[in-house]
Length: 533
Image 1 (cartoon, rainbow, N blue to C red):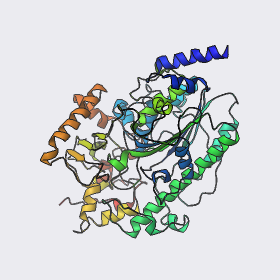
Image 2: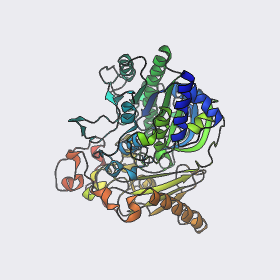
Image 3: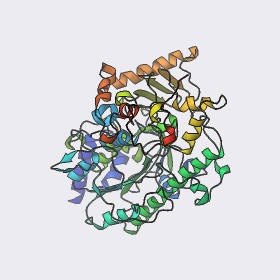
Image 4: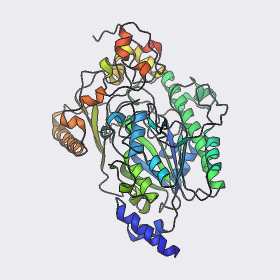
C-alpha cells in the first residue's frame, strides 16, 4: 500500500515539475517524505566572501559544511540588489519588474502575489521566521492582521551580542523555540533572517574582537582607495558574516540532534552585495553575484559538487514547491518565472549541469528615496559567463541618489566618507566618480577578466556587435516577461508610493529646509550646496 502511494505521489510530482524526472531522480524522490526547509539569508554579503570560495579573511565553517555536504553554486544572482525587492523575488519566483510595487524598495506589497511560505503553510507546513523576513515595506493585511510573508515571527529570545551594532536577537534559540512548538510529524519551513552584516558596524571590531589583521585583506576592489580605513571596514563586515555563520552552525547542530538534518533542505545565501559604495543597491558583479550553498542529504546526489550553472533567486520558489509536492498551478501563486533546481540536485555532474542555464537577467527601479519626486534609477542587465551588459534608462539621474540628500542608496560608512572627502582631490576624484558619478546609458564589462567592472567596453568599436547582441537578448526576454519598461510604461514604477511615510518626498522636503531623518547614512554625507563642476 505504501509503495503504491509513493508511486502515485511520484507521478504527480513528475507531471507538474518544470523539469522532467529521470529514472535516477525517481529513486531519490520516492525514498523521501516531504522535506523541511531552512532558508538562511545573510543581510548584505557578496560573492565570494565565504570560506568555501577560498576567501581567507572570512571564517564560515557552517556555510562551508553546507557546501561540502551539498552543493556550492558559483554563479548565483539576485535579480535586484536591494533588500525588499530581492526578497520579493525569492518569495514569489518572479523577477522584480513582474511584481508591480514590490519591484521597489520599501513598497506596499501587492496582495495578488502569494509567497512560497504562504503556499507551504496552506499545504500543511509549519512556517516561521526570526529577525528580518521580507523588509522593509508594508506587507498589507489578511483578515485584519498583518500579513506574514515569511511565516509566524519567533523573536522572543535575546542574547548579549559581541558588538554594539550586532542584533541582540538570539537567532538559534528562536529557531529552537520554533522547533519546540512544531508537531513531530509536520514538515517545516523556517526563514533565518539575520541582520548581519548589514550596517552599521562597530569600527575596527573585526580587529579588536575578531582577531583579524589589516594585512589579512588580500584584495581591495580597484574602485576604492586601498587604505587601512577601508581594510578595517572590510574586516568589520567579515566579522559580522562570521556571526551569521555561528548561529547557522547552532541551527544545523539542533537539526542533527533531533534527527531532522538528513531531510532538511538548507539554503544559505544573502539578499544583495556588501553594504559598500558601488555594490549594494547597484547592479554590478559584486552587487548581484551572491554566495549560495544548498544541502539536502536525502535529496542531493553526489554531494560536494561545484555548480557552474547560472542560478537566479527566482528559482528557489519552484524548487521548494516541487520538493514539497505542491503543483505550481495548485499553489494559488501567480505564475512562476523561475525554474526548479531539482535537476541539478538529482544529477551527479559537477560544473555546468544544465546547458540552458547560461545567463541571468537583473535590474532595479526605485531603491532608497532622495531624488526629486522619489524617482528611482531604472536599470536592466544580462549576465553571461563572459560579459555583463547594463542598460541605464535614465542616465541623467544620480545612480546612488542625489548628492544634496546624502546619496541615500549607499549606506553610511567609513569607506563612503573617505570617498566623499576625496571628491575634490585630483588623485582620488576617480573613486567618487566610480561610486557616485553619473553613468552612460550603456555599460559593458568583460567580467571574466574584470569582475570589478572598471573598464566600460560599451563605446569600444570592436565590442559593438557583442553589446548589441546582449541588448537584443535582454530586451527579448523582458518583453516576454511583460516588463513595463519594454512597452513605454516604466514611469509606473516611479509613481508607486513609498511606504515609509516619514521619508516620502525626501528631496523636496529636505531642500525646503525640513529636518529629515535618514539613519542609514551619516550627516556628513549630505552635500546640500553640491557643485557638479
